[in-house]
Each structure stands twice: as structure tokens, then as C-alpha cells.
Length: 158
Image (cartoon, rainbow, N blue to C red):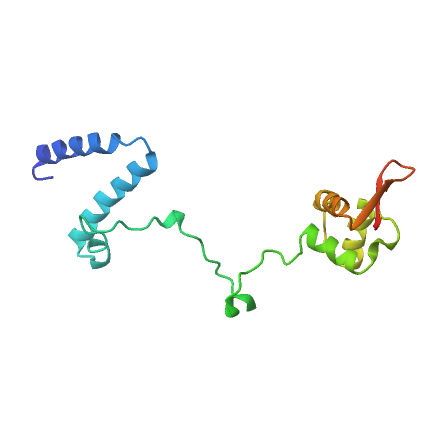
């Protein structure tokens, strides 16, 4: 069946001691893949695998840690710009836009801001998307806030 079975068994026992000396299971798995992957590539004559990582040469890069590339193509990929996730501006950007459009001439609550963005601008936000940026705009003096009869803050242009 297997020629030199005892010799292979001794070699595997020695290999197990070396592999188990590493605490990281990921490192252990990678070593096993390298040992058996190179052995398979050499025996089948696969030139890509066999010559890819020569002993003493530069180590191969770990595919799991390399950045993943999207299979979707977009107009921004052609121009070299970074692709955006949903295309929805963040809370701070949207509030800056609303301040620039004088949306805060009349005092507005966070709920009113969220509803305006959803119904008039077709962007869905949560109240928490605006709470931090509204505080910063208030501290910076761009907006003022006062509590209304319902004890909710209303934000208005300063």
C-alpha cells in the first residue's frame, strides 16, 4: 500500500511537534497547507504552486488579509475615485446642506428633520444620525436650541 510507512509515520510525528509548537491555529493551518500543498504541487507538476514559495524566499501574501475588490463596476471605478457605499450623505453633511438652504429659519425638532429628509429629499435617517452633529453645530454657534412645550429641543438658525 504505502511504501516506507514507518518512515512516513516518523516524519509526520516530527512535523506534528513543530506545527503544534505554534499557539495560533491559523499559523498551524497555514503550515499544514504549505507542506501538503507544496507536496501535491511537486508531485503533479503544477508549476504555479511549486515555484511560488521557494525555501528561503519571500513569503507569500495571505489572501485573507488583502483588501477585497468589488465585482461591481461603477462610474467612479472608471475615474479612479473611491466607490461609496449607499450614496447617502452622512448626518453632518446633510445638516450642513439644510443650514445652507435656510431650513432652520423656523425652529425644528430632530423628528421634523428626519421626516423632512425622508419625505422631501428621499434619504432615510435615524434620529441618532443627527443628534451628535446637531450638538456640534449648536456648540459652534451655527444653530441655537431651546426646549419646546413637549420638552424636546428645537433647533433654529443662529
